[in-house]
Length: 129
Image (cartoon, rainbow, N blue to C red; front, side):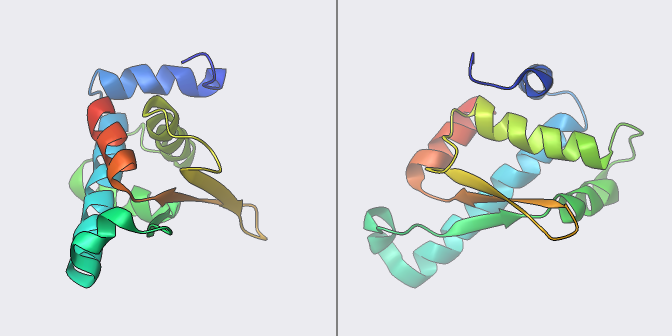
């Protein structure tokens, strides 16, 4: 937990305590990761578990925010809170940057997150939630 940047550390606690909308964001991403795994299992079968390059889930915070807004109404659902909740999920699950996930920035400055979907990362995320 000591490696978690201080602005994100608070969000880890909010997710662990299942506070809305932070937990809702984390759960949505977890569910999306499971969907990627299921699609990969359809394609690769049991070979999925021995892939060298696992599929990645690309997370666009704006799309996440739109999906969560369809489900719940909450004044705390802002783009900053969505981005921080995503990072809290990744760091709180003890995923390693560059190994398990990476962040890209568009030319307009928006960030996207890319998470490797392997059995290990799925287990880490589910244990965290």
